[in-house]
Length: 251
Image (cartoon, rainbow, N blue to C red; front, side):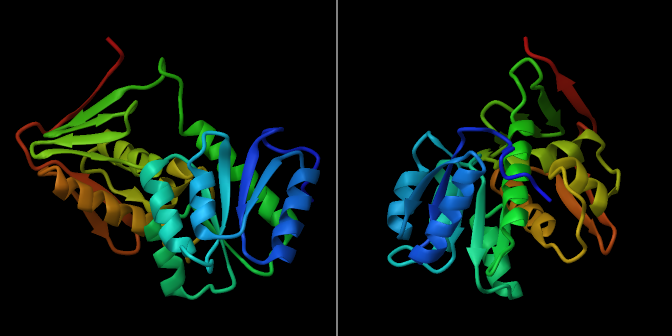
């Protein structure tokens, strides 16, 4: 069982956006016991405003909220703070709801009623993955392939028609695929190397992220394409004359 007194980052501030005061206070109590600082908000609008503050390290976001619902709030959080982890809390676990949440930018889903030790473990995992996804500037490398260029500092994708912002997992996914153009990466390997967790066959997070990256490849006018091998995984094809990938260190 997880020891609640040993958080991933003592003093880290968790934002709880939950309109049910009983659930909100229960979450806040257990998070504080685990060593986290907690901020509580009861509406999507107030939660969004709080999430945009630099002090917040992770958001626990209820799906059904007054004013601005959880999906809309998650979408705006992701647009304005793309590296901020968002765990969505919901009493609904149907496929459509989960996909809408992932499309909006949620990193994870926890269904009510939830096990507090499991939730604390998920919070720790998200904070740890977020740290690992932000290497020091000395470790960052510019990646290019064909008509594409990835900027690891700005998390941007550049192509013939312009550039597009990438979320951390989108960047990690495209960077890994571009490291070996044409190679078929199994779903299990992609999830383990990009998400740093074991692949669950029922999860749709990988597919959602691939769909987002495909859309952004189109936005920047790239000739690269992510191909699906049904039931196995994904590969990237570089269809320009520059059929290779280079990695260049800081100059």
